[in-house]
Image (cartoon, rainbow, N blue to C red; front, top):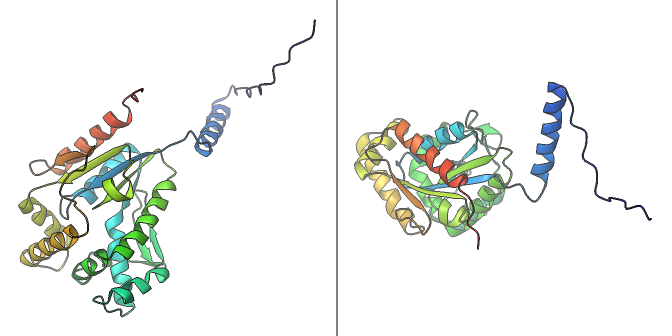
Length: 264
């Protein structure tokens, strides 16, 4: 009788020491990550300015062990870059022309968040009134948005953690419409103004409120960030404190990301 040969590759021997097992499982995980089966959890968070989406998303990412991407930082960083290049922000063609020279870096580890332009740390500078007053001029341009959307998608694809939380204004519909978890984080206008005023340095509450309202009006011409698209979960944080809002996001992510996939 002819012998049958099993052509399937044999499994490697499992080590019997703690160190060996750690290396073994690490190697398996690396192989899994490199395969077509691996798919990090993408959490897309939309919301208007002052809704708390940046601080909440960062804290939720930390609690989940995920990376965190603040897309608004890129718009602010690009606005600063344009200003530093002495570009007329009312000249769309001139603004768009500076995109290829925009050397942008962002730290997506929630414990090591930074923003750099041309190798210079601008994490604090992009939150100043000068940049806040300039960002709407660049954010409304379709060419700028398209350029940065590609950048955001590349960062999402490059995460080395089990997942990434990406927040902004058109994340659930444009940047990551196929994200496993999509959230619209909102709050009343009064709550948003109070929160944004606490974020911006060297500016009165009245001026912050005026700029917030103006930014909402300008951005609403480009993207509908106040209405949840189909399949997007709305989370109103008006009557929630910070910790409660973070917990609500974390619980939502865990419930959706671990839900069984429907067949058919």
